[in-house]
Amino acid sequence: MTHSHERGNIDDAVRTCTRCPLAETRTTAVPGEGPIPARILFIGEAPGRNEDAQGRPFVGRAGKILDDLLAGIGVARGEVFITNIVKCRPPGNRDPTPAEIEACRPYLERQIALIRPEVIVTLGRFAMHWVLESHGVKPGPISEMHGKVVTIQWSGGERTVVPVYHPAATIYRPAFREVLAADFGTIREVIGDCCAGGGD
Image (cartoon, rainbow, N blue to C red; front, side, top):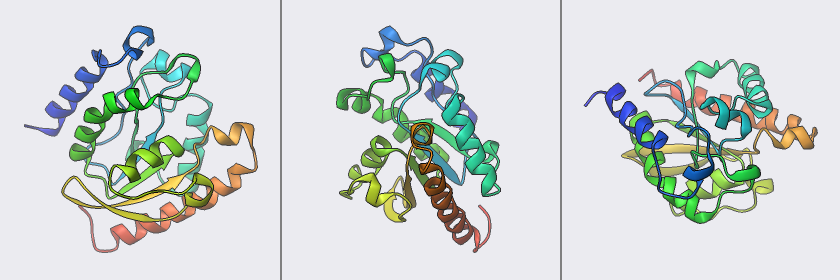
């Protein structure tokens, strides 16, 4: 099966999913976007209002901040894959429930197997906890974990995980912008280490 065929299967399954009650309140499910395979995978929490309307991840204010952070380390948005642990918007942008996160788990696991990322960047505490706890790592609070480099075994290979604050956090706490920029500097270093031995 080709990458594009399997990707289409996943995207179609996400867009027609009724595994949890979010299907009843969403406008559009948001599978994610980016190249397959991709060296870097960004995993956020859940779509917001703009994402729900457009069917694309990180297209609102947080998306603009993410684009700026990527540009700051010389990475184009089109070079990375971006998705969320939950593919439909929780009403009122509330936190996703454990049941909603679990309902979306198969989609994210299929995506990761297809994308084969070398580096996984978790955006916010929900994505950090999901990725690390799913692989036997008990994370501390994101205030302690952000910018740290963690190695896990996932989907047939070793993956490097870098937890960072969610870009939306900088909208309400501007001081986080410098913290995020520094953590993206760590991501740039990790990418350089991954690429040192050659390409794909």
